[in-house]
Amino acid sequence: MNVADTEVVFALLGKCGYERTENIEEADVIMANTCSVRDNAEQRILGRIEQFNIQRRKRPGVLVGILGCMAERMKEELLETGKVDVVAGPDAYRSLPVLLQNAGPDAPQINVQLSREETYAEIVPVRLDRNGVSAFISIMRGCNNVCSYCVVPYTRGAERSRDFHSIVREACDCAQKGYREITLLGQNVDSYKYEDCNFAALLKMVAEACPGVRVRFSTSNPQDISDEVLEVMASHDNICHHIHLPVQSGSDRMLEKMRRRYTRAWYLDRVAAIRRYMPDCAISTDVIAGFCSETEEDHRDTLSLFEEVGFDAAYMFYYSERPGTLAARKYPDDVPQDVKTRRLEEIIAVQNRLSLESNQRDVGKTFTVLVEGPSKRNPAELCGRAGNNKMCVWPDTEHRAGDFVDVTVLSCTQATLICRLADNGSDAALTD
Ligand code: SAH
Ligand code: SF4
Image (cartoon, rainbow, N blue to C red; front, side, top):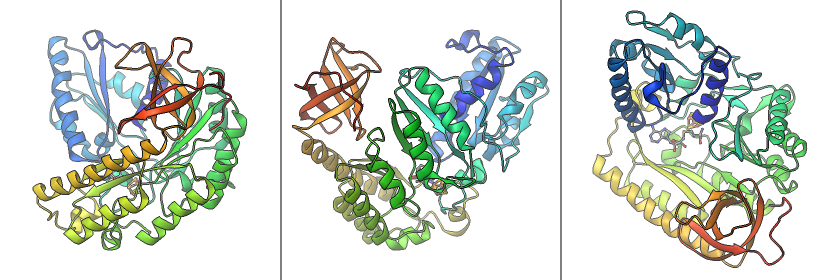
């Protein structure tokens, strides 16, 4: 999401004559787009501000800016460090040119106004050239849930959906510019609603408007993911069969305390529905170990849920108390750090095995893969992701980034499918 937001910032600044540089030594403005979701993300940024200030001291006039969630959360506190000239929250990027113009050695500037309407709908992002084949499209901003551990509703404001016309236009524009994969982004894509268009209708529109492009989306919320969305996924070949469905905990007691509005049974029912519509659909998740008052029994519920679902992949975190959230105000952060760490390690160990087992089940299968480029380890090999989001590598001198290629899986590690070009000729039509 921050990559997508940064692409909007580049577009807004580009219009005012700013150019992007990769070289910090020649930058007049140095900015970081930030995340507040866990404390260590913020600590890293505080370290980066120190680095930026080396430039600021060496070359007076250089401006340092902090954008995004941390700007929104810390506000003036960042300016008070004396090390930051501009602070702009996630809804304030349109004012950046003015903030930068007015900022100076003794004139720090701040705009952390949140908006109920801002979606940057008509701004055509200047894409960061990650691999030239895959583009992010933001479909909504903010979040209306109040998961008790989460700072996002405070830093990104209320949920609002972007006009679907501008989303479809941006998707077609990406297709025309040669992008072969689009990822639709929102904190809770299933609650997308613009006029009478819901997420299922939007997904269908995007998939049908860009038949040569592969479509992904993130993040689905277990409370809201609908059969209608699953049906659209199952009936469109260019929508990838992968759902990121963060569970957070396997214990009903924890889920209630986290204010997630579903139970373990509901979550398992949604997993069963996904598999009914798409038996080959990969499911990944997020989980938090050691949330307030979590017992060994709660933790075992999480481990058993992982086993029961057999996730293909997971992002795993220990609980990090965020100032201002409901949990910070109401519940003591009472699981000792060594217990959090141990529980997280146990979850990681289970998931590592599940990831390996999931990959082993794919040995012998043939997938259509979107080539991202040479593999990092061996330049004679290409790498790219299958529809299920698994990373594949295979020896290949014929294809290049942006091609769709059919590969057959020969073996695997926990992280990678090791493949060869499939027998049927290697230029694939776009199917999942
Ligand atoms: N909107 C998405 C999640 C966005 S935040 C959803 O509801 O699923 C990404 C992930 O960060 C969350 O799924 C959660 O697992 C993790 N996270 C959020 N707040 C956290 C906190 N205070 N401590 C640790 N992990 C947290
Ligand atoms: Fe945070 Fe919950 Fe909103 Fe996700 S749905 S961003 S976890 S409040």
